[in-house]
Length: 79
Image 1 (cartoon, rainbow, N blue to C red):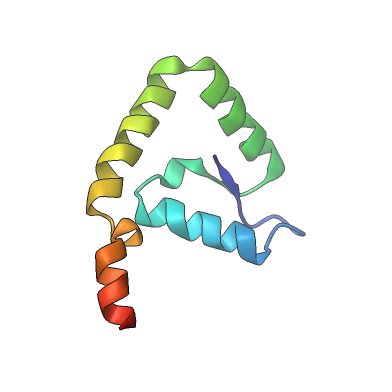
Image 2 (image 1 turned 30 degrees about the horizontal axis):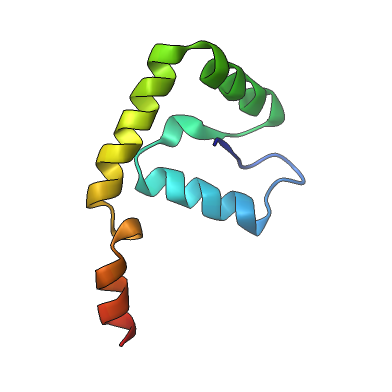
């Protein structure tokens, strides 16, 4: 799901966290600086099957190597 960052009224913590997650996962093209860009990304997700499949595959690959999804490491650091 794209993240809306930067526009007045959208600079809330959930937007910033979502944007950070997308950056960590190397999915910067899903970060929208304004509502018009967000809508464009959503339309592209719904209509451009090849592009959306590429995004999905990159998420699957990046998820395996990202510290964001390294639960065992997180638990070790917590203990």
